Image (cartoon, rainbow, N blue to C red; front, side):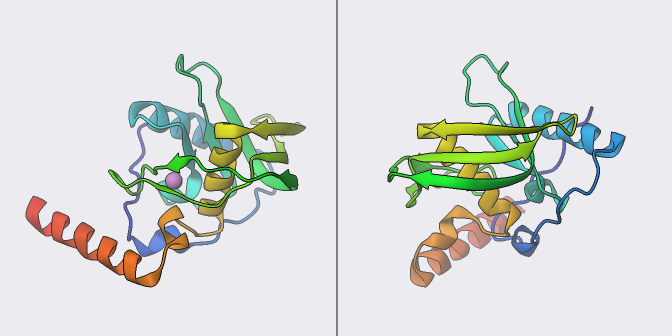
Length: 167
Ligand code: NI
């Protein structure tokens, strides 16, 4: 297992669209383990492969406080959605930034687990929001990109300035 480096907004690689996983190989299983370890260490409740610069449709999520409810979603597809949610979202790729994004309150998602077995999950509340947030990453979209261009350019300026200060 290994900790992976998480890409930081506004890194252009976060805009890469992930490919479907054609086959669950040992490499894919190792990726899910490394992603889970990286998510728990951060700490965070969700991580998409896009964020560790691997552009395949793999997501790990664990919203439990005990960190023992790992959910692996490979090639996820939302097949039904309903309601409106208003959770404040954050992201490991955009540290310190939070905001509300329009999301569905409930989603039904079909995916493969880490062994390649298909499953269907009915999720609501925080879990539903998390699934939608991570699936956006696989499409190359970071949650702040729902905001206006002006708000985004202010945010980018802030992050670039922070980076200069650190160096
Ligand atoms: Ni994120």
